[in-house]
Image (cartoon, rainbow, N blue to C red; front, side):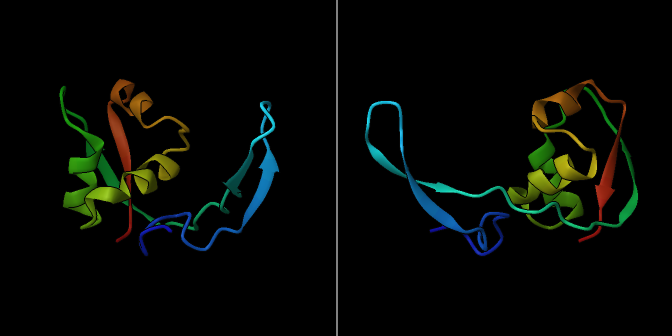
Length: 89
């Protein structure tokens, strides 16, 4: 169901009923990765986190790893930071 690089790839799935009575499949929240911070990126206005992920982690879809390394839930909140922690590849 998920790409092999997705953080949800190994998460368990289960079914629940939503408010309208429909049975839906949900995915459990994965454990946070143990990541080593290799340095910090000085953010320039307009830079996108997926571009930074492609440059530093070699995976443009790995923007979530940068979010976790910076302890943010919403990746957009990194647009307010001057320095962004960069995790290992």
